[in-house]
Length: 293
Image (cartoon, rainbow, N blue to C red; front, side):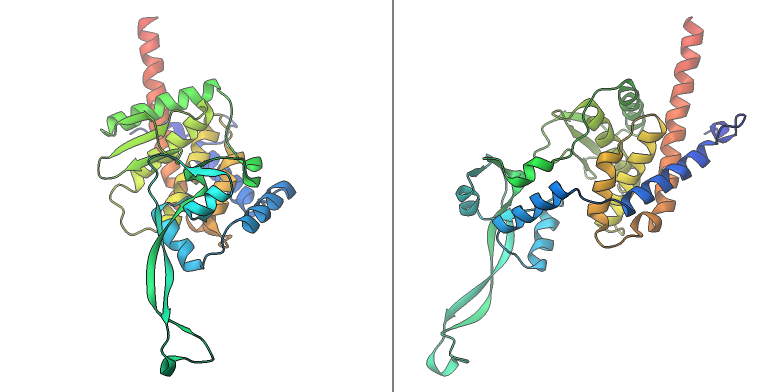
């Protein structure tokens, strides 16, 4: 593919310089991301309402539903005025199993002894519906419908089509979208705004390009790279996704403040590849328009 788009035109920054600049913006945005007082209050209120589970159980839940945030039993959700949505699959976590101890087995005056663990069903907040909860006050979504987003969607669809990766807009359950490596297909929620649909489509397009045969990278790396690249690509073509992307990357980075820097080369390379593909498609469209003019 021609790289003429990477040449400097006058005093304008090259595409490579622009990508690197946007990566710095992402790094700074994630490092400086601070939850608002309203968000912190809502999270603390939610933690007070939710059962306390071990770190291991939270990891087990996230392995089954990566975006899981607040989990509770079917009964507890009912107590909170919420019902599990029809068709939702329970997450399985571990619970200790105790039996009554015999006299000779008692220690420290305890009447029961731990004999192992069993799995019990729980559901994430996003798998339920009903009465509003504190966290509902701080949901972040990209609103709006701008021409830039529609152009990016059109370009992303063409790139996916050339890679024989079908795209479907429809029901995605609790997720905004997902990529299926087995089927090499992308599904994006039809309920999202055009701007959010655009960002999600580019995010899943990155997964289809980078993670189709990648079995070594961690889930954190995959998600930071996908969202980081989506931010760079969308910003490059005029759609600012920082309100969503900074928080998303921060949530996957956890305490690793250098996650963006660590995966920066991968984000830059992937963004560069997609930007060049988009630019080539735009040039082809312009050539066609000139021919038919």
